[in-house]
Image (tube, rainbow, N blue to C red):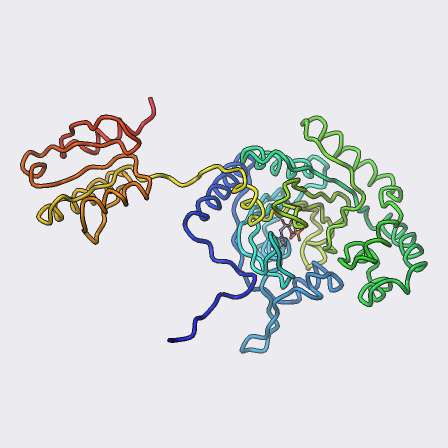
Amino acid sequence: MSQKVSGVKGMNDLLPGDVEVWQHVERTARDIFSRFGYGEVRTPIVEDTALFVRSVGEETDIVGKEMYTFDDKGGRSLSLRPEGTAPAARAYIEHSVGNQEPLTRWFYMGPMFRYERMKTGRYRQFHQIGAEAYGSKEPAQDVEVMDMVVQLLRQLGLSDVSLNINSLGDDACRPVYQARLVEHLRGHASELCADCQKRLERNPLRVLDCKNERCQQIAGAAPNILESLCEPCRAHFDEVKRKLDALEIKYVVNPRIMRGLDYYTRTTFEFIAAHPVLGTASTVGGGGRYDKLVKSLGGPDVPAVGFGLGLDRLCLLLKESGQHFGRPTDLFIAVADEGSADVAFTLASRLRREGLRVEFDTRGGSLKSQMKRADKVGAIFALVIGEAERQSGQAQLKPMAGGEPMPVRLDELANTLRTRLTPA
Ligand code: HAM
C-alpha cells in the first residue's frame, strides 16, 4: 500500500458541513461592513519580510519566532503574512490611495500564518476578518471600528463577548511609561526569561506579553500605563469612552491590553469570549490605533485604526450555539425504473436552471436507497418518476417531513415548488 500523505500540522481542511458556518460569518461581515462604507481589499499572501519586521516589530513573538520566512529563487526574503494590517498599509501607500480618498475604509478576509504552538482555536494557518480606516485621528473613528465588531457579533448571536479597551499613549507619554516599566522590570531582571532580558533593553513593552509564567507574574505587578498618559492621550481616551457610552456599547477598561504588535499608539482593544470551548484562545479579535505606521513605511503622515477578528475562533463559538446555516435541498428526484432515468436527469437539470436546488442520484440504484439519500441530504420534497409519471406528465410531490403527497404536473413543477417553498 502507498504511504499516506498528511496535511501540514496546524493547517486545517474545511469540509462541507463546517464551510457553511464560515460562509455565514463571511456573508454577515460583508453585509455589516458595507453598512459602514468599507470596501474589500485583497493583498497577496506573501510579502517582503522587511514589511513585517518594520511594522509588527523585530522583538515581537510574531516576527521573532512565528513567521514562515523563506528565500525565493531570486534570493529575496519573503514571508507568509502573519497578519493583515501591514500588507494593507503597504498597498495603501503603493497605490497612493490617500491622495484620491482622504478617508479610506477597507476590510479584508483571508488566511494568515504563524508558527504557533497549536491548541483549540490556535492554528498555524488561521483566518482573519479585518478592517482598517485611514485618515481620521478622531476618537469617533476608533469607536466606529469597535461598533462594527459589536454589530457583527450581535448579528451572529454571539452575546457573551466582552470588549476590553486600553490606551498605549503616544510619542510624548509612552517613553515616560517605558521608563517606569523598565525600573520595575530591572528589579526582577534575573528572574525574566532569556528573551525578556533582551527585550528589557530593546523593547521593554514586549515583556508584558511574554507567555512565560514568571514573566507574566512580573508583568502583572507592572505600573499601570493609563496613569502615565499625557493630557492629549487622556482626552482622546476619555472621548472614546464617552462615545462608546453614547452608543450603549459595554466595555471594560483593561490596562493590560498591550496587543503584542509594535505599531499601536493610543487606543487598543480586544474582544474576549467567555465560552470555555476556546480555552486560552479566548480573544476573538483585537485592534487599535496606529498613527505612525503608514509614515514609518514610507507613506504619508496618515493616522489609522483597525481590527482583526479570528474567523476560526468565531466559527468555533458559532458551532457551539447549535445554529444551522446550510441551505437545504429543495427537491430530490428519484427514479422508479431504468427507463425513466433520462427524463429524471433532464428534469433535474431544467429545474436547476430555474434556480431550484435539486438532487438526483447519478448512480441509480433501488428506489429504497434513493429515498434514503433524499432523507440524508435533508431534501424538503421528493418526487418519484416511473413509467406512469412519464406517460401522464404528472407525479406526486412528497413532503419529506411528513404529510400528504400532492399531485403536480411535471411541466409546472418549478412554479409549484416555488410557491410551496416560499414561506406564507
Ligand atoms: P492579532 O491580535 O495578532 O491582531 O490577531 C487578531 C485575531 O486573530 C486574534 O484576536 C485571534 O482571534 C486571531 N488569531 C491570531 N493568531 C491566531 C492563531 N494562531 N490561530 C487562530 N486565530 C488567531 C492583528 O493581527 C492585527 N493586525 C489586528 C489589527 C488590525 N490591528 C489594527 N488593525
